[in-house]
Length: 201
Image 1: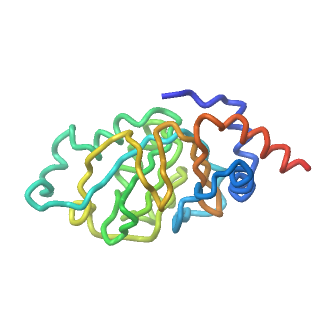
Image 2: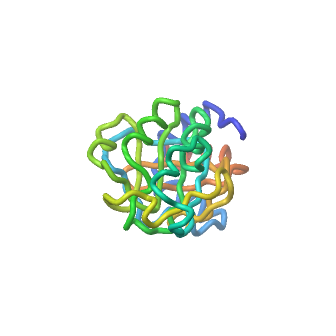
């Protein structure tokens, strides 16, 4: 886990995701905007943090009963409990919002532990409660069924696909009213500086 410099974070909080998209395009990165993901509540300050990832695969009934949530080592619970302070939990839900990626209890716990936000290319249940939290949350659309009906949590902090974008651990995630951009970690400082100049001039 790298530590995102405070100065870089502050710069990125002052630039828009469209500006970042243009900057990355100039550098040859054409596919860094997570598709079909929107904030549960618009008007929040810009979300900036390093990616900590969770990957779902299609659920198999014999391995994914409701009782599995009892176990602390369940990957979804483990992701919530190990996501580093200041990071953003990014979930690969296979672009499938027919079952929720999580609900208000897990998102509240993530917030209380000091994460900066959460992004999924699936959906959230308890969405009105999540929207009322002081916590940036992005998803595809509302979803009531538990994730266990369709999703099986498998891997934590591995490369994933979220909304057709490759997300690697420690990539920098920036989210605003327009959506979510993924900045490769090794060029984050450079992008922050260039976007600041683009915004000023």
